[in-house]
Image 1: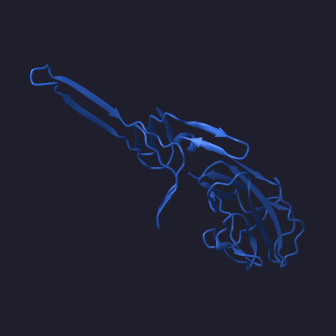
Image 2: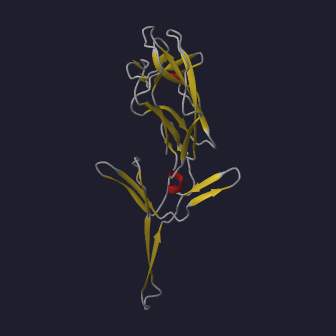
Image 3: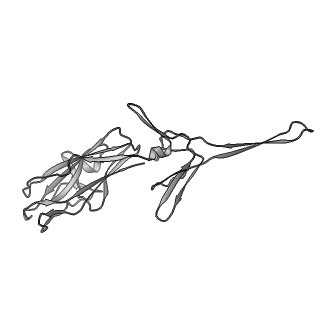
Length: 254
């Protein structure tokens, strides 16, 4: 039996069919009982997508056992009896046979630079910079990109801060005002809420992880997303160097 914990509540179905046959040779013969026991052992070992107008099933499995269990803080989904599982590959393709190889995915995230220097800034004249985030995963569901900051841009002597831009990730807005904001300038399936060049919409970095971009479906190789930063300050802003830490996280989707 193979088990995996994750937040996905979907039970597995099992089939068990018992077939009983009585064979009577003739009226004087001894009655022989022949019992046939057939246990369904069919496993669907390829990923099949089924869609309707409102729903989509990315993968399913037929096995001899398995179910969904839960407690106060966790959920468990398990399967029993998948006879053909494993990973196969050729020069151009990769196959994952069975349910668990399919959900046991790998993911990596690379940012083109660990430090972004926005340079010198004149209050009232916005400056910009960017990061290229490359995500590589074999997940057939795609991935979510999350971002957060540790605090507002903080003066080198910790005596002043530059506030964040005013609009949130769930409702970015056209640039108007001051602060530090960001937008998704390019990527796969970028949501329309981020606008487009030259009318990008911006949001502030929250202090706890929040999803700002979702990529659906499988991509062979690295998938790039460009994040653009924008900064402006009032004329009263204290001069000096400011910094903070932005954290990006990629989570694969099942």
